Amino acid sequence: MSLVPLVALIFFSVSGGAYGIEPLFSTSGPGMGILLILIAPLIYSVPHALVCAELGTAIPVEGGYYHWVKRGLGRFWAFQQGVLAWVCSFVDMALYPVMFTSYLSSLISAVAPGEHVLFEIVGLKIDLNWVICVGVIVIFTLLNLMGAGWVGDSSVLFAIICLTPMLILTAIGGYHLLTEGINPVTPLTAEQGQSTWNAFGSGLFIVMWNYSGWDSVSTVAGEMENPKKHLPKALFWAVLLIVVGYLLPSVAALAVGADGDNGWTNWKDGSFSDIAGQLAGPWLQYTVTIGGLFASVAMFSALLASYSRLPSALSQDGYLPRWVSKESKRYKMPIASIIGSSVIYALFCFSSFSKLVIFDVFLTNLGILLEVAALIALRIREPELERPYKIPGGWWSVGLITVCLTSISVWAAIEQYNEEGSKAVKLCLIVVGISLVLFPLLSLRKAAKESAALDRAAAANGSVHGDAYGLSGSQWDPAHSDKAATGTGTGSVEA
Image (tube, rainbow, N blue to C red):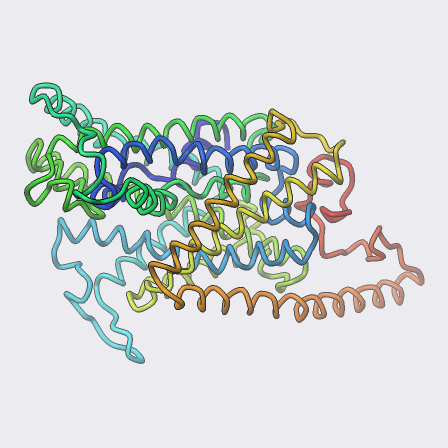
């Protein structure tokens, strides 16, 4: 991947455009909504992007943040990072095919959930909606099997298709604002009597999801063209593109006012289509809807490229069977990892699983905090590590980033508990508990295989040529390590 496709891949890994930002305004109000679109990047997105820029250029390897945590904090925490992120993707990734069918159902009512049930298996209703979801997954799984370069190039095309309707909406809405003398940022809050803090807190919780995922692209660093140079630039341009992509359409859409079916007090996911219809007629409504269709599948495609590298990295390190990381001869893609992940996502497209997304906030922010901890650990333990991009400002900046991301993560966890109750906490604890139990079990399996490999090597050669860990040349932590990438050795990343 070159620079432009990399920017597009980050854009869809994080945002996909203004589609989905609508509930921010009905929850927090026009003024607070616009303020949050501008403030959230400063206290959440930019700090995380800076962490990704430093670690991603210092350790530009396939598997990305899994290997950052592995080198900084060790195998145990890396395992937790990889497993929890992958499990979190089960419900997160299922949202995008469902979002696609949601937009499609506004054009073709027959594809709405439950409208056409084909048959039933073990209590699960197989309807036309789910079949279309699976079709979307199959198409973009095939695209991913052709390599991250194809995913990046297609993301550029999808970005043009997704952003063009929003540019038209911005122009028409902006014209209405100017000619009708509408102030788009009043009132500040959603309703009279709502406190500023309540409006800010409720909106920040919403906008966090629309500004997360900056580390996603790191897992395909091994397929980037000069990641040490391009990754920081791509993150910068992606941050700018995403902020503008949220801000301009949102301001323009406020031209519809507060009242009526399409007024901002009634905005929900997908409202931009109806807003476009009110401002310009059915032609723009259909155009924006088609843009939403492409945004949802482009986000699925981009994130599949990211998440599918996690089981492959775990396989490379011996926690999963070797066939999980087996690559195709032509495209050098982890076939089983991509296809296996897609099958799981298809199963989670059933509406009965959608409620499981409530643990998403906990696990996402836990992963971010592990990356921050790895950054600090590497700054202390490996001050001489080559860092093509280093966060400016020294320890003062690192401290400020740590405070920002820790505070927001803790606050988000509290808000999630207040909103969903103990159910979200229980689900999160179950997932984390399973991951904690799996580590020693899979580590024992890994050690047994390594011991058997040593015995076979000894029997065949009469001696064992070990590495720094005492492993044979056919070790479990090879290939996609930073040592291999920089030409300083083929040991594991914490060697």
